Length: 231
Image (cartoon, rainbow, N blue to C red; front, side, top):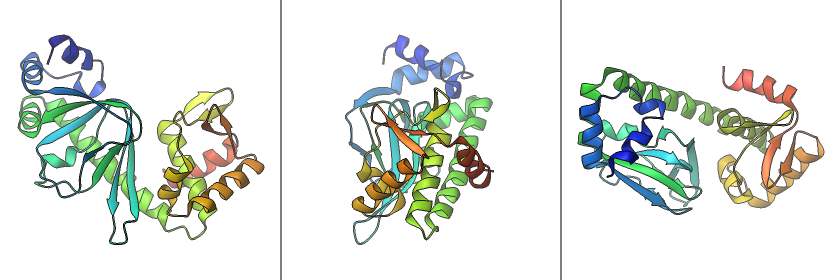
């Protein structure tokens, strides 16, 4: 890998504190890969050999059940690891797929372990990331227990806005084109049901579309739900 590419990732908070020896190890063994939309990059139960850091794009973890249904575990945007739990597990615990064209830094697990050993602050960031994902997974499991599909979609939209949202006028835009099919997977409902609920939430002035992106309009409800769900 070119040195300029590695120096560029020092802009990411995760790698900001690593020493120059560790940078040299990343230059020697790291690979930057450009991944096309909807590509499966990790399959559940495959042998873990690398850690993936998302430089650009968006990805999600999911599990498959016997009836081929999907359960989405979490969604990650750029500047985050996708599978840091592989440091401690021989086999992948879930599937990981990119939602849009993405750029990923692929690092052998052995090199990540070296970085953890040689860079205390980096090791702390790895642990913090794992802790945050555990809490996030617990929240998503809690959302899945909601019996009402509209309630599930409403809270999941709050989750996406809370994690990914950017200001748009006086509202909060979710800056990705999430399809109805993906949202239906997220809440475990049929596509037709999800589409109908989206239209209901638009009629209720909770959301609207801006250039194919969902925007949260009712910030009072959003902040109320956020305080309950993510406290």
